[in-house]
Figure 1 (cartoon, rainbow, N blue to C red):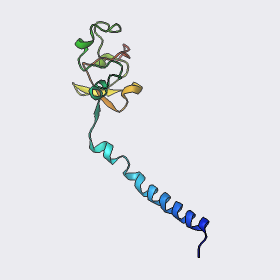
Figure 2 (tube, one colour):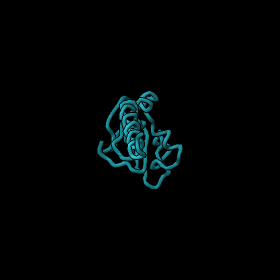
Figure 3 (cartoon, one colour):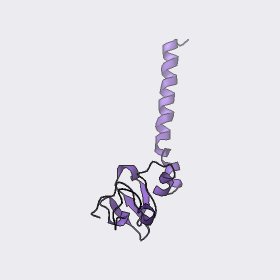
Figure 4 (cartoon, rainbow, N blue to C red):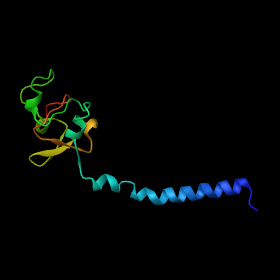
Length: 108
């Protein structure tokens, strides 16, 4: 008859094996949903005052004439409408080329 330690050890090893088998599938749900967009974060009201159209930011205190995502230092490029952003708030998120946020830095 196995002792309690042996039973607990076997249960632990089974859980570790099951976890190890599940790890390769952990990201599948994320990629199946498609790319995330900054507009979805903006709806939460916390994503650096992001807007899809820089014209909606012209009354923001940090906005400067001509500022938009496509000419920001954080802009990674993309198509004519959407692209990547290197800012930590928007990493792995698509932003609108005509968008703007309060982290705008000229240079892109």
